[in-house]
Length: 84
Image (cartoon, rainbow, N blue to C red; front, side, top):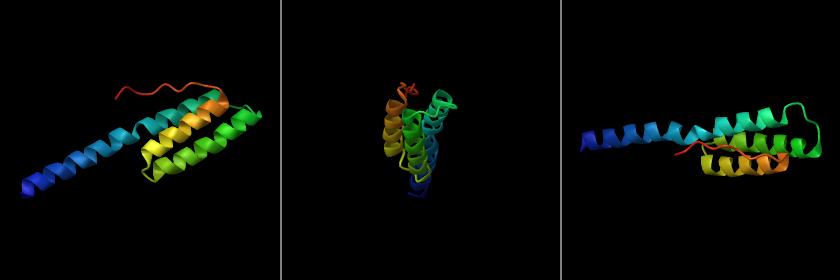
């Protein structure tokens, strides 16, 4: 029983970073796309990306990805996601 619990914990620890791996990539794409733009769309995208990063840090990765999609839409870009 102890080995089963240990195995479960190891799988859970390994899966967490795999799920979180998408968020930094999405943030980098938005940062690159909006760069030094100062139009209303990029300002909105920056704000949404900041919110998405806060969700990522809180471990809410699905919500974070949705917020990154909103940011991309505001900036007029399409995000390239990793294949899972």
